[in-house]
Length: 297
Image (cartoon, rainbow, N blue to C red; front, side, top):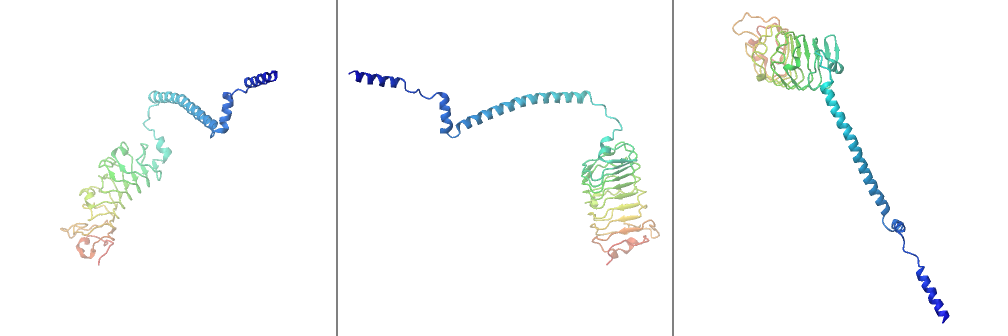
């Protein structure tokens, strides 16, 4: 009997001393190995949350100074910028080369005429990306004598662009995209507009009429259907080759009503590459000392 009681008491004590279930910490350790990277997932989520929170805080911290600095810059722009000087040509002369009244802006990828020093007499702006010329480009530039815009993308020129350049003697607009000619300055001696897209309707009847100093005219490689009218007596060289000229008259170069008229200044007229047989128009050249270059048969 005593033995049975002792056995029951021993079993009761063993039941009371059974190990307790795992704690929360032990459960976490179990999950580490029992699930698919559970702890790494929790860490990654915490990292992303902290990263985003830190990023947001950093953005807030950086945005505020930027806003303040922008406001300061705006205030400085309003109050601290010095007034622009009349002869402030530094930006142009850093981009281009300014030398003794000449400005060289060749192959610098400009798309507009830069501000020029007022004493400028010569501008070379060849092989750039200029598309349009306006009167404002040369306002208050009374000393300009030569402009060279060869090899740009010029499509349009305002009529008043050159009209006030009273000293301008040489103007080159070669190798552009022109369809018509603007009003030209009165003292021009050389005009070059070869390799454009100019048609006869793009040249007004009086474009060359009053240019009494014009000696050299280059309009070759265009789309002219006829020789421009009213060419001045002063011309020495006329290049009209490779156009679409189909006819000429007795008054094109000479005067049909004056058989004694001699045009003695002309040294060269080029008409080759046009769809015209010059031999069919013998009276058109009777006033010339030299026959034009072209096809006669």
